[in-house]
Every structure is written in C-alpha cells, then in structure tokens.
Length: 362
Ligand code: NAP
Image (tube, rainbow, N blue to C red; front, side):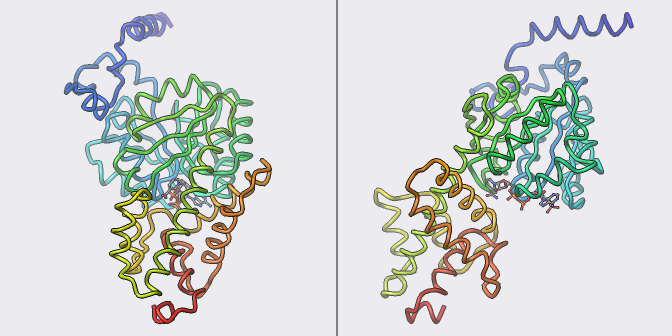
C-alpha cells in the first residue's frame, strides 16, 4: 500500500514536470524542427505510460493504416504501452503484428477485452450496423466500459448512433469522443487525416498532440455536444460525392462527344475547379481501375445520411439528392457489381445509363 502511494506520488510529481514535447510523437517533433526522439528522452514517461495501453478496434481499409501510424509514431507499441487490437477478421490483426515485429501488439479475441485492458480505445468500424453489433454485443465495447475508460469513434455513422454511444459510455463512467475523419486509405496510411471531433473536451486535449497527431495532419474540435463532428463529416462527404458524380458525367460526356478524356482531365486540373480528387480519380476512371480506397457502398451510406440531415435541417438539397440517387443506383446494380469497388465506379453506372455509342462500347 505504502509502496503504491509512493509510486503514485512520484508519478504525479513527474507528470507536473513533464514537458509537453515528451508526449509528442516522432512526426510532430520532426515537423516542429526538433530531431530528438521522444522515446529516447522520456524514460520517466514510461513510468506513467505503464499504467496504460492503447486500444484499436477495426483494422479495415482505414483502421489498418491508422493503427500502423500509432505504432510507427511511437504513441503505442512499447512494452509499457502496447497497442491492443481486435478485428472481426483475425488475419488483419496477424498482418499488423507481422508488419511490426519490433513493437508490442497484443491481439484480443473480443472488443470487450480490448476496452478492459486499455485507457483509450480508438474504433474504426464500417457502418451503423457494424458499430451496433461491436458496441452493444455481449462481448462488445460497452461491456468493457467502466470508470477511466475512453472511446474515440472515428467512423462515419449517423448522428443518432454517436449520441447513443456517448450516452451509454458516459452512463457507465467512461468518456466518449466522436472523431470521424476526412481523408482516405493513403492519408490514413501516411498519418495525414483530418479529425472532426466533438464530445469530451478533456479527452480531446489528452490525445490531440499524440494519438491524433500521429494519425492526422489536423484536428478540429466542434464542441462538447456529440453529433457536431458527424454533421461536419457529412457536409464534407456530401460535397465529395456530388463532385465525383458531376465529374463522372463531365468525363463521360467528353468521351461521348469525341474528346480525349485525359486531355480534359488535364484541362480541368489547370483551371479554377482543379481538385486533388479529380487528379487522383480521373485517370483511373477512364481505364476502369476502381480498386477500393473508399468503397462505393460507404460513399453511398454517407450521401444517404447527408440527405437525411439536410431534410431534417429544412435546407434545399436537390443536387446532393440527385448524386445520392446515382450512387444508390450504382450500388444496387447487381450486374455492375461495384458496391465494394471504389466510389469512382459511379462512373460505370453513368456510362451504363447513357445511350451514346461510346458508352455502349465501354
Ligand atoms: P471497411 O474496411 O469496410 O471496414 C472497417 C471495419 O469494420 C473492418 O475492420 C471490418 O471488419 C469491420 N466490420 C464490418 N462489418 C462488421 C461486423 N458486422 N462486425 C464486426 N466488424 C465489422 O471500412 P473503411 O473503409 O475502413 O471505413 C471505416 C469507416 O471510416 C466507415 O465508417 C467509412 O465511412 C469511414 N471512412 C472511410 C474512408 C475511406 O476512404 N475508406 C474515408 C473516410 C471515412 P473485417 O475486417 O472483418 O471486415
């Protein structure tokens, strides 16, 4: 007992003297012009981190890269602060362990076990349905929640899902923050996502300079009312889906009136409407390369959620709604079979619905 008290006193004393940079990941320090590794300068830091471990649930297209950033940036993965993971498909956990042989990654067999063994757990699941199963199931996230546990949900869900999870976590003495992200597979792998956060301010302050900085290039806090992060995310994605559907129609039109689509992508990229989205997706669209970075089914989910939000807000949204219909038609087209392909595959539906000679030959 005395020994524990003495250790606690040392920890608290050290905490109050620990410089902010001691907790910052390697990427931040390099960006800030400092070259010293935080791990080499913070042996005392390890005493504090011994009390904790970091969790990650959902190693899909996005989660795989995000968890890897936590490891490569030194936020988790040490003996004192291991990364504790769970994924429905276990092989993805095994792949992460294999990729980081020098890091401490612990694989659990349920989401509950991850939460039980960690202070802060990040979650990156695909849909509201998946999230409900993993959160509310018998061996799910909520079953592991108690005082001192924190959940950071990075998925794009309905606002009501985030609100429900927040209430359930807080009711059991935990802390919750929604943190949906702007960015796709490559930004997730490269640690340059943009986090759109709302919920526990303390939790945001605690992770913004380590976990969020390791995985992202910017973090925005929209306030303590859960739901505002999701609202921001749905505005971004409704615009993105609408832009891609309109771009697809523009390129299909170019092809169908005998213009070289590559030339047109170049032209579009030189004017006021240039966009990294068009530069990235355009060349792949014309050669039918729709390898999934952001699956079309998820893009459609977000468009549908944005339409619900717009309807409720009473705002005019006919352009967004039209794009949502186009994504829905592509998703539901069994012959086309592009629901799991990249959302750029909406282009195939545009051609399929067209009667031009070029479209028929495609
Ligand atoms: P994903 O690869 O399709 O799936 C994410 C995770 O959800 C995977 O770990 C998957 O497990 C799990 N999952 C799905 N259904 C499940 C179920 N019934 N039970 C348990 N686990 C289940 O999705 P993602 O592309 O990484 O996207 C994750 C979230 O981020 C989504 O909300 C998406 O809208 C959002 N987002 C995606 C992008 C992007 O470009 N991809 C960009 C920004 C935001 P398995 O591995 O076992 O399938």
